[in-house]
Image (cartoon, rainbow, N blue to C red; front, side, top):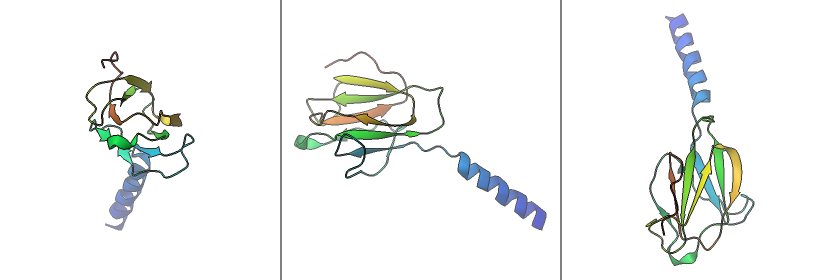
Length: 119
């Protein structure tokens, strides 16, 4: 019984290390260092709107170990509802800081390559 418990605990420990980090963080500055927001799951395509206050200065894209997949950060300049795509930024989540235009009003992530801009 002790051996089974030890094996299970070991397997669970390895599984926790293998869990992907899918959480991006938006920041006020352009270097991913000032006033980071809460983590946003890059596999959730929900809209992140900033109202009339403008957007953030940068976003830290995590290294989730999924180097074979392409994701898209959809950026909308004119409204905070992600109604269209002014800019589509294709990326592979390898752990890096992406500078943003602080005048952008909304963002969303999608788990595929970006389509053509449509605003």
